[in-house]
Image (cartoon, rainbow, N blue to C red):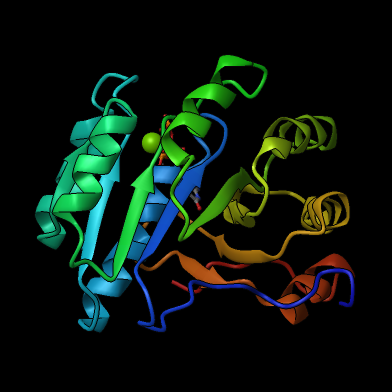
Length: 216
Ligand SMILES: Nc1nc2c(ncn2[C@@H]2O[C@H](COP(=O)(O)OP(=O)(O)OP(=O)(O)O)[C@@H](O)[C@H]2O)c(=O)[nH]1
Ligand SMILES: [Mg+2]
């Protein structure tokens, strides 16, 4: 429990605007997780939320987030480069929370580093979630963590816990990164299948008292 540490969910104090980046390997659930968090913010109805996507890489990636933005009635800005990012931030200057989706890339692709850094640099009030699938094997986990070492400060979201056969990598990731874990996601349903990371629960899974079970 001590190793796992406390959760670091989104800080919802409205002291200043928050720009939240979702980064990570391909297909781990970045866009879906962003949509879950966006939907929960909309349900709470207290926050002025904007969405940005820099994923202009994969076919239909923009449409995927556009569909969520239409359903949630949240504005979406599509950005291709740093300049667009600034324009989007000017348009979103009144927003409390801006959620930024990025393209999933092969973590062995060295160019990805520059792409992400270009968009993120000079944004001061940013927070980053590194999204990792709970089904990742240990060696891949290590290589993902090494790759994203260039991000100074991030917290981790573990997705697809419902598909995982073990939970040791949650502890491994914490041990390797020393970064806080924010959320776990437990299925494809938006917005229900997301929980704030709960160290007690994960420890009980780890020592085999219990396993993740879908409640519905
Ligand atoms: N079982 C399960 N599936 C999930 C979870 N989160 C996301 N998915 C599914 O994973 C698939 C990929 O999700 P996306 O959100 O598109 O993943 P992504 O990281 O944005 O993918 P790229 O942008 O292509 O890198 C979809 O079928 C999602 O429904 C989860 O917690 N559990
Ligand atoms: Mg995506």
